[in-house]
Image: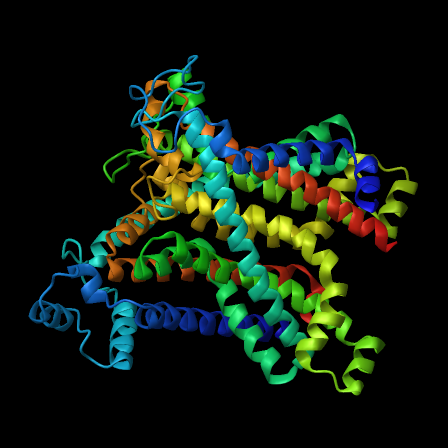
Amino acid sequence: MNFFKLLRQSPLSARIGIFMVLINVLAAILAPVICPYSETEVVADVWVMPNADNWLGTDHLGRDMFTRLVYGARNTIAIAFVTTILSFVVGSILGFFAATLGGWTDLGISRVVDILMAFPTLIFALMVLSVVGTGTMSLIVVIALLDSTRVFRLSRAVAMDITVMEFVEAARLRGERIWWLMRHEILPNALPPLVAEFGLRFCFVFLFIASLSFLGLGIQPPTADWGGMVRENAGAITFGIMTPLFPAACIAFLTVGVNLIVDWFLHLASGLKD
Amino acid sequence: MKGIVSLVVKRLALGLVTIIVISLLIFVGVEALPGDLAEAILGQEATPETVAAFRKELKLDLPPHVRYFAWLGGFMKGDLGNSLANGRPIADLIGWRFANTMFLASVAAVISVPIAVILGILAALYRNTLFDKIISTITLSTISFPEFFVAYILIALFSVQIVLFPSISNINDQMPFWEKIYAIILPCLTLALVVIAHMMRQTRAAIINILASPFIEMARLKGLKNMRVIVLHAFPNALSPVINVIALNLAYLVVGVVIVEVVFVYPGLGQLLVDSVSKRDIPVVQASGLIFAATYVSLNLLADVLSIISNPRLRNPR
């Protein structure tokens, strides 16, 4: 198959990246099987050093750190993934609309996006969250909408190049509707750059959620998530206990993995062009 | 010369419009979002009378456009209203914190800009050697790390393993300058590491881009040393993108400071913003959000203006 052929030709860095992401995905899917304890179970003393029972020690309430990390993978990755998908759905539909309709629709959406992009994302998210309150749903919606501005820019630019092609013109003359045009003519041709962008946006959203959770305004306890776990255990570091570094390292591990794959993808995409 | 002035004035006007629209957005956003402010703060059990009294106190009973202009007008005069949490004037809360934030960000900028530019030049000079690869790997990984990871690694290394710097950066007005610098070394380093990575990669890319031009080949063929070609021939021409990326990173610094301030418990505007968000102290959130946004927009504007000035080709847009 095409995919396996690609994989065999992939450079070492991309393979390492795939391996790193796979570990995370497996941990996320198999969380209940791998973990010796349950997500919120208190099993030992506070901040116990790593030992045979608690492989990575315990956290600030005496919950097993390893278990929390694995469940954290599940919650953090799932929420970031849903958010990225939502932002792509909103961003690319609006982008395709703007490109195919042009005129006032394009101008209107583009100006709104320009204004939103002039606003620092973190500050904007903080302000919106202060009003709607913190919670997983509002977190997903707010970040997805903010991020969809970036997706809009890209998908509009890509779709602009496609809409001037003859086959789109032909479809228009045939009297196809705008929705059909977007689905059958533009989307398939715009897919490769959007896929590469998906990786990048996922990293961004993932780090963003981690940062918000770290500030205490993202995913709320007792749900295990990596950013929040860094925050909860931050006090340990002054006692020389490295517990807060584990979830932070997990965040870095996953983003480096995704970045390595994205690098390879971008390389492939640029290589295929010339 | 006249062309530049009118172009710059146009950009400035556009920036001003952006800031005004943002202020409107901040204001309307709070209005339009679901949930009544008074009920959210007073809780579900509040009686209708207390809610009404609270709304009156916040002037929520006036029509929106009246409140918006009153708010914006107050902002211009430095009167930002009172905090909901403790009733103190917001201007008092924000003033010295904003100065602290700017202090932290500018010290980080002073450290990181020269290092990033020099590293970028060196990486372009020795590109595709081991040195370049090592620097690229390190910068790529610093970009993928969340700021608080870098921060806690620095704390673990320099204030726990080796007790060298404080892990909590508490500063006040009475402290002498060097003592302040000592207190903020770790947060500064965290910010610097993150922005150096970005700026250095851009500098390297910009210089390598220029290296493909014919005049560089000419300089090489004249037999000039590699160092001389890069520093005297390539770098001045790469200045426009480099200046642009520096200004963009300064904008990032001012905003990125939020997380670092929380890690190091630094008394800055970011810390105040985060605290106010969790307390749902909306007036403070609005005021500090507007200040952050205005700073961010102005620095982005500066980036635009500087690149227009430093690149003659941008002066005559078609």
